[in-house]
Amino acid sequence: MLHRLHAPLRHLLALDQLPRATIEALLDRAQTLRPRALTGDPAYRPLAGCTLANLFFEASTRTRCSFQLAAARLGADVLNVDMATSSARKGESMADTLATLEAMGVTLFSIRHSLDGVVAELAAVCAPTTRLINAGDGRSHHPTQGLLDMLTIRQHKGLDFSHLKIAILGDIKHSRVARSDLHALRALGAGEIALAAPVTLLPDAATAAGCSVQASADDAVRDADVIITLRLQRERMEEGLVPSLEAFYSDWGLSPQRLQLARNDAIVMHPGPMNRGVEIANEVADGPQSVIREQVSNGVAVRMAVLEALAATKADDQS
Ligand code: NCD
Image 1 (cartoon, rainbow, N blue to C red):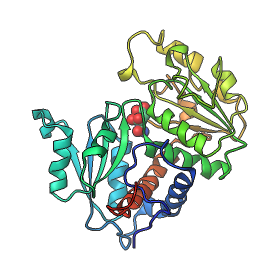
Image 2 (spheres, protein in one colour; image 1 turned 135 degrees about the horizontal axis):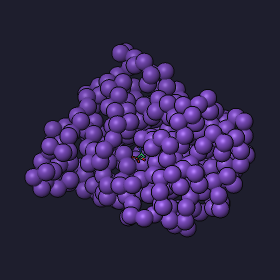
Image 3 (cartoon, rainbow, N blue to C red; image 1 turned 90 degrees about the horizontal axis):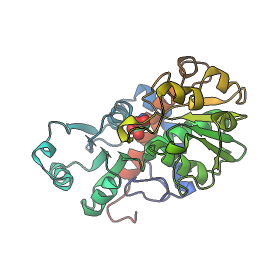
Image 4 (spheres, rainbow, N blue to C red; image 1 turned 60 degrees about the horizontal axis):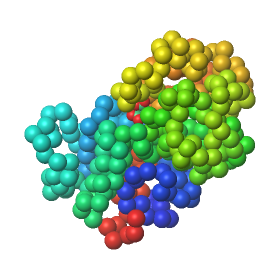
């Protein structure tokens, strides 16, 4: 029997379209699924007979593997389509690739692409029974990462985010993780969100809505309950946005000294992959306040919850 959300979910494209109640229902479900996410349960196969295709046009370790594990732990079949050797190389459009896989009975897709808005465009042309999950498009959205980050914060800080100070440090401008985190944090009523980045890496005003932009990383980290560090996304950058990696670390990186400004029980997060010694020190990434591995574990549970919710939505339900 498939677990259904109170409100049907046709696709998961972004978190800004989701009401707070839907985000909370997905997080509650992920928390319930966590034991099954970690060890698997051969008797639990609600998605038996369904197929998930992972279409990743950009590099990924965590996200693709955790979609694969999440689907397998629900009893689904999984296709990892290697886009580097697929017909996309022969010029096939993404819509045709999708239609080809739909013709083989694939109904669930997780899609990552370097172009903003691609997954939403595919959602407009796919079959009514198809369910799409945005696994990261350009710098726009990464909704499952946003959800797994919220689940991790909840596990350490409780369900009420209204008293929390959350600091987000580093390359916010190019980060789809930061955008999805910000949508979720606002939806869940986070108390204070402090952003800190060099001016060249600050996001636009719409992205930063409801946040305070701090002049220094120290100001953002001071008394924080949660510190989210972000990868310096050199592949999305024009040259010259940071003077040097050493200067970036010194001004904006999370060093052990800077971490001491936060609350004693502050947690440190990073979506991975990390540039150690650039946005985060080794000692911090591997230290007692780091919850980076827990984020990864939570990724499987969150993706199970999302896959279940999408598979349970009937083709004629409203999205
Ligand atoms: C992120 C991504 O690809 O957006 N990684 C991830 O999914 N965990 C962050 C990044 O690449 O820096």
